[in-house]
Structure formats: C-alpha cells, structure tokens
Length: 156
View 1 (tube, rainbow, N blue to C red):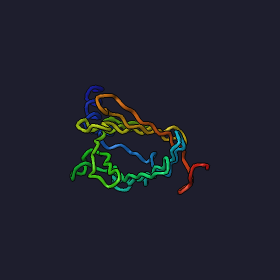
View 2: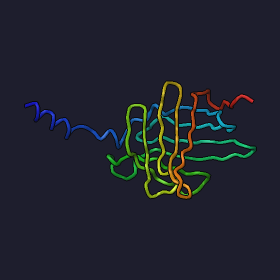
View 3: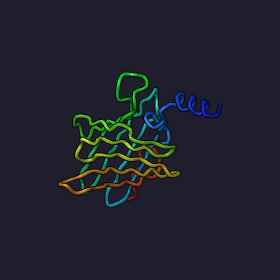
View 4: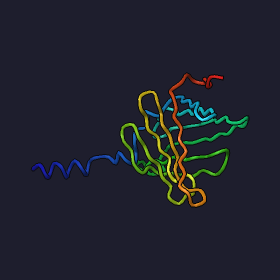
C-alpha cells in the first residue's frame, strides 16, 4: 500500500525543478562592490512571467540588460527559462537546470559565456553569478545585491 501511495505521489507531483516559484527574487536589488554600481529589478511573477532589468555603472560607463523568466514553449507545462537580452542583442535562453526554495540555476550548455546563471536568496541579500568559459578558461562573475528602496543608488 505504501509503495502504491509513493508511486502515485511521484506521478502527481509537479516538476518543481522546471517551473519554480521565483517570487523570492522580486524587488529592487543594489550592488555596490568592486567599484561598480549594479541595480537589478525583478517584477513579481504574473501568470508565469517575471520581467527584469539591470543597469551597471563602472568607470564612467553604463551598461544595461533586459531579461525575463518565462515558459520556454507554448505548452502550459513548459519548463521555465531565463531569457537574457544584454544591451539589445538577440535573446539567449537559459532553461532551468535546478531549483530550490531560495535558489535557481539556469543553463545553456551551447553558449560560450555565460553557460550558467545562478541566483540565491539569503535574507535581504540576493547573490547572483554567471559562469562559463572565455578563451578556454573557466570564468565566474559574482554580484552580491542588497534589497534596496526603488531607484536608490550606491553611496557616493
């Protein structure tokens, strides 16, 4: 009987790893580390869509990226993906590889850099990193964001 219940639960359980609830990412996040200011904003999830944007200021230059987290296909049960659009380039889709209550990993193995996009929430901190290869060398770029008031800046 227990085996039948376990098997039934496994069949009826949703694939949480492929369609995670990422509401924990929503908000305005600010990073003031390493001589750069990065402001990243994520909307709350709405019917499977989160919209994001980031602005980076460093050495008198500004960069930007638009992003969305949404289903990767038209089916209602399609897995989620991170669609990155850096400075107006064509979107790159990073499907969900794994997820947990405060962590999500997106991966596009065919992409050069980055191959992975990772977000982890720890209280009022949002840690993000991208990983991949540049010229045959493994590279990682990290951001440590603090939850902040909308449109706030780093201290001068």
